[in-house]
Image 1 (tube, helix red, strand yellow):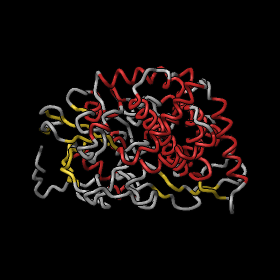
Image 2 (image 1 turned 90 degrees about the vertical axis):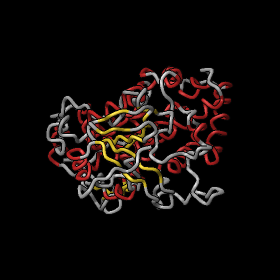
Image 3 (image 1 turned 180 degrees about the vertical axis):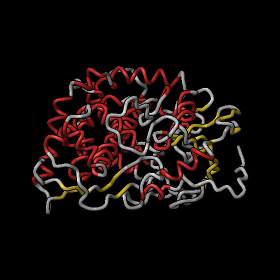
Length: 424
């Protein structure tokens, strides 16, 4: 493992501390890293009760991010999984059961199986239902507004993302609240306000919410739902997975991955896009007039507010990245929001340009692990912004947003907006 390199008086800004992100994406810190230390050593101190780690390399430029995500033989998902924090060594075999934490060729086998269930044809069949849900939720938020304002997260976007996903999976209506509860527990674990304090392990440190000890309830449910789908098949993803010949452990981990990643991608991106539009009235007017295609606007809003902030790999061999030697076993973490603002890849990256093309953002990753649900996420986001444009006033803040305390998910937990003024 690499020792922290001496930097002398040339300060390397911290981009690890989850508390930084509660104030917004630290773009100035990212810019300094891209300019001076594109592959920068980051200490990993104890934060919020979570134990210290050995440190990692932060990758902040677009081209270097693509290289790490694409070169799976050099930068492994399997060796140490894909979260910055190291899993408990006893849990590592368990977390490796999900394809997110596997390398080619094992990853490819599982991805092909689930891709058969997650086809664009099946996803597109839900388009009318997605549109009806967006319309219903937005109208309800407008009608129930207090002093013309509503928290779009609790009134609309949390439920919108959750119900769309559970429709696609085929989860019974009575069980849908469980999926949001599990998602909040797994995603919000760094945020003391978002979730209760996790239970402690035998050594007195918090249990990781992705550990088998805290996922048993979700896995029990996945097995029960799969058995129900075998007896009562439907045209949904869980029926396809239940009939795909997966091992029980593989099916459980697919359910975990689809529940958490499938829900939180849109749950983070939709309010983030609205917040970006609220901060750029001129850009929103272009969208409202139809001056830019909604499909392009979706890509630009994803660029400026990626749902995922970071992903980790582990160097499988000694290598060099952007001139920086990296030893086998070192953690290498790509920062999507920084790559999406790299001046080498994007003209005027700080400007919200809803017509930007091309737009090679990495908000859905790249390489073998590119987001499997990207098509479904884009469908939901495109529909959501179209319905907002047709039903609601220009987005205007009605109070400060609250962001998730997390260096992993770019979440917004409260977003007060004006919703009851007539559309211009």
